Image 1 (cartoon, chains in turn yellow, red):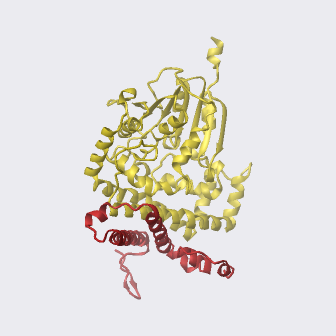
Image 2 (tube, rainbow over the protein chains, first blue to last red; image 1 turned 120 degrees about the horizontal axis):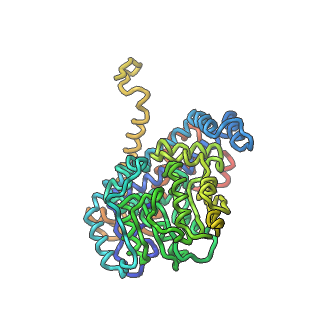
Image 3 (cartoon, rainbow over the protein chains, first blue to last red; image 1 turned 90 degrees about the vertical axis):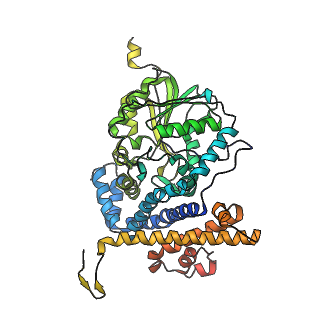
Length: 394
Length: 112
């Protein structure tokens, strides 16, 4: 699940319409949030990590966490380590700043974009007129009668009021406010301080093992930021995406048309039915998706993806690292998001193994590894066997 | 309401309100920064244009050297305000200079 890509990034064609911008107040108010987050994750968090390592109980838990035969379960270790962390005033201050910035992204961001509503709509219309896109090459299929899963509907992801569909200008808010002024600094959730989240996406796409793909599918595609990266690496591929959110899909369809690459988008609950044919895709990409689904829905999703993939097709996944892959202190930091940044399935999924889920679904050649700092992005990739057991018997 | 008597009078908020007070401080910090940014933008437009309207200030987006200068000033401002609690203990010369957004001369850094 990804946010809308900035409309006027460097890949826009020559002669594109002038850049839309927030007011001085809107811009400066969000920029100071980015600076607070940079100080929090860049200065305070390393201090808190050092304090944890110097604490005898913290050191013991860290050793247990790294042991192949730990004395405590993962959940017990994290609970004990959290208690150690919460005894440190620097840790509490750092977490307060993280929560404060996460709240203010919307408390401050929504008024900042609302103040510029008329200007944004005019800019958006000018961009649409000025582009030479061929929207007929792509498609958008919404399903008004789609049954939204009970686990999805009430959640205000990342403290976003009303959830993904809670405000019609969320796309613009992320593209022109929170994205460039706060998120681009890194240092939140699993994203390391100073990390380039656009570059991370491209690096992830390059983990596909083959040189070309005819048809690629992305469940939870959101605003097509990842499919845009897929298009830049595999321009020959026919792209398909699905999501539960109609607002994200509408934004995604507009962005894809504007950037000049065709995508076929569909509103669907991919964990139950993608609506796609058996054995019809050569590749599947998922980006920052699985920690937003309960483990049971992830297992169902992998079974459905297995069904629609051709024999020999590849799946590449980027999601936060499992707890077992990070330090004891960093496990506490990741676990914090579950309760404090409205990520109800973050910890349940990080306790699990996506590798094991993929193998349960029938995939082979399953492997996982990190391609960035603090083990993020964490890549998991696998392949659908050339012939399944059922086919082999037939 | 907790109104237990203290040396300085009734304690209206109580210790559980410290996070609320911190939120108020952070809100004020942001308002001060927004004004500081506006001042920098206004000075820049006056220097480069000689006159400026409110609308021009509202619509101005810093780029290039000015954007870099504002970013450095903003980070220094955030470090000093958000880092005030650690300034009580992180008091070496290099730590003080780093918080102030200044280079740490090698000769001074050895005095940490």
